[in-house]
Length: 115
Length: 113
Image 1: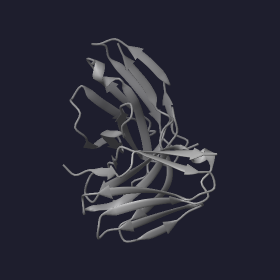
Image 2: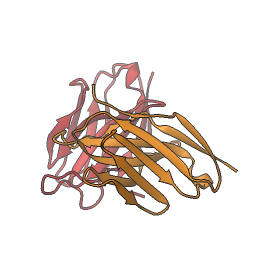
Image 3: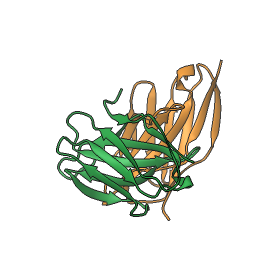
Image 4: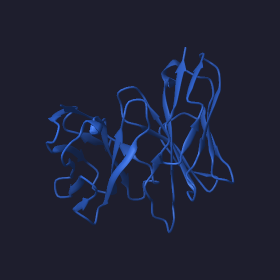
């Protein structure tokens, strides 16, 4: 177990709706990264939060947004859901110290289905 | 664009044999590489990592080799067990790349009894 938790485990939404996914990072970590994993593919980087600020973003539209809280937990929000947003959403926590990246540890993921 | 790729989508091995999973990367600016194992319905699990200033690193039953000359990474699993059956991903972090992981498409390892 990595100590990274995500909620909910599964979620079903309809097209056009909005969704919020949550992630609690491992104790001692200050960074949370979010990834989208379509079936049969590798995870794709959405964005990363470090000390409550966005610290890098992948090729995802603005309707994907996020937050990081003072306790380093994080939320991923997706507006105007599309069918192609159906995927496993993974968060990973890590420690950035001295400007050097460290290992990212993943949570179990949230399976989002958009109908 | 730059990418991390895997040579074989599926690898079948006999229980007790050694497994070798290969990965090619194209960005010479990558400075940190990680192997993850993902079982069905679960998140990726860290196996072993290596930084670009090393060419070999060993863990428990696993060894990662890095050949920067040909931009090649491999994961060796000794005495493969049924519990090793999973999809294996290599991932890279680029220097100055914002600490984001770039994953390949994965290799399915199947362990036959």
